[in-house]
Image (cartoon, helix red, strand yellow):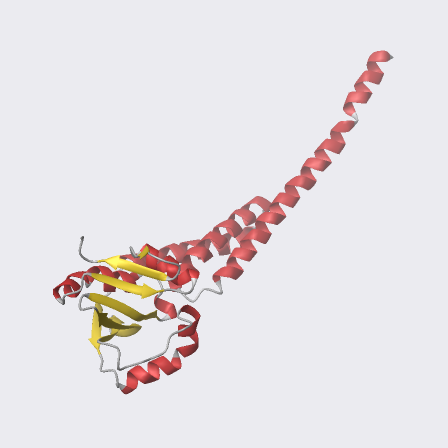
Length: 232
């Protein structure tokens, strides 16, 4: 009789443990679904095609995993297809060789003025204190990517050898650092040949400061950044 009671004591918690384990597994699966949904939602807010594809890829991968774990074949198949599509387009984007060019413009150019008017709200997000003063600019050009206008650069020469950047604006669809790399890396030789030894600019936003640091600019004060073109 004692043996029988002991067996009963040890056996009764088993169903409770199994039920608790199942509930916990369901909760974990639900969280995977919630996280995947949130990531997909975030991807839909991206203006950059590359960012949209990358974030969407992560969300679709999680959703595909979620579908497999809960046995929802349609969910797994649909999101598996989205994963393949995202990978295909990302591979196409990164393999594609874009043609970068600059198009010099006069400071009284009508298209330049219209461009600044059209994008003025977005420009102020990154350059809060920007004011177009055409009489100061000595270097004004649009950056073209496959003949599409991707950005605008306005700068002036100070102290003979310093290029002060007043505006380095990139249209939302092209914010992948390629514009900046083209201007400050690929055009570096032209800048040096033009007599410049360094580039200076001001930054009032974290996003713009992150952009500058990634391009090699060094912070010299709270809002001042510089890029050395010639080693001193």
